Amino acid sequence: MDLNEQVARRRAELAEKQQQAKDDQQATVSARKAEATAQREAVVDELAAELNATGVPARREGEELAIEQEPSPPLDTEGLNRRKLDSLVKREARKLWTPTENWIVISSIVGGLALVHLAGLGLIPFFFGIWKRNQLEDRYVAQVLELYPQLRPA
Image (cartoon, rainbow, N blue to C red):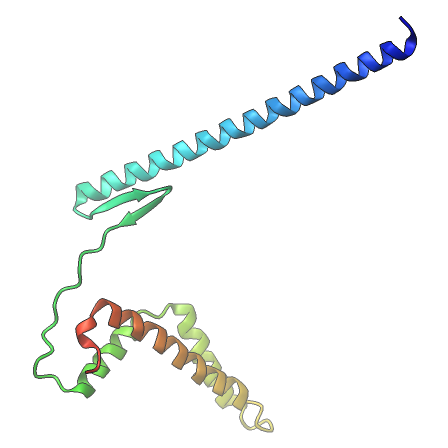
């Protein structure tokens, strides 16, 4: 056997060992991922069981917990005029704003008013605050109307 054959055989052995090590590593990673997924699903199942025991209907959807919402209670809108209904919808939509959204709108409007004396530069944040308030109001009014379709304007 000459030296070139021995070198070629040794390189083939090393390449095979390297491939085997890579395959083992991939199998280990796959096993860890499967184990982690199983653990997450078990935790979500346990949380769903605890919530169901307390009377909140919940179930697992994949790796996430889905709380089944009961249909919204019917509203008695008879006798209320359209203006009062609109006011009610806007008030309920306003309750859905997050504190961050609230502060963005408030600080933009107040900051704009405070800076309006500087060659009108305060008008930019002021109008941004007004625009953002209208955008958020439209989004959350739509959510409230989804929950209570009987409040839709006729």
